[in-house]
Amino acid sequence: GTGYAQMVCISVRDSGPGFGHRELARAFEPGFSTKKGHSHIGIGLWFAREVALACDGRAEITSGSGKTGGVVEFHLRPYHPQKRRSAQ
Image (cartoon, rainbow, N blue to C red; front, side, top):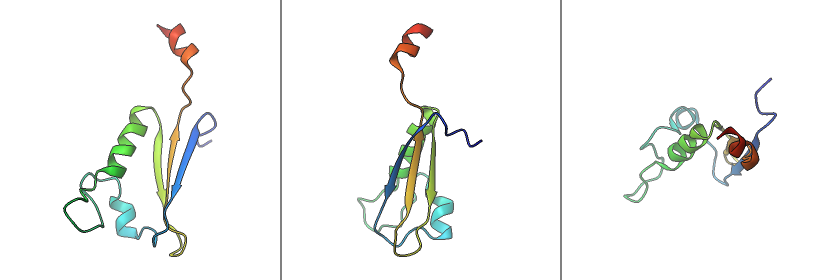
């Protein structure tokens, strides 16, 4: 299996042209951005993925077909406070 059976998925689709091969390969690198200007420092996807990984989750990107934009999915394990309390 994929390991996603007990996970929550948050899916975000943009309206841009999608991700090219170069962008897909580098999208989660800190500092990588396709946007120009000083305010685009390229840490958004990197940071979101780091948070997902720290929560025992995953982050994935798929490219759109040029008209549908790209899709970023975050797969996270549900939080169960009662299980956490019993483990302490």
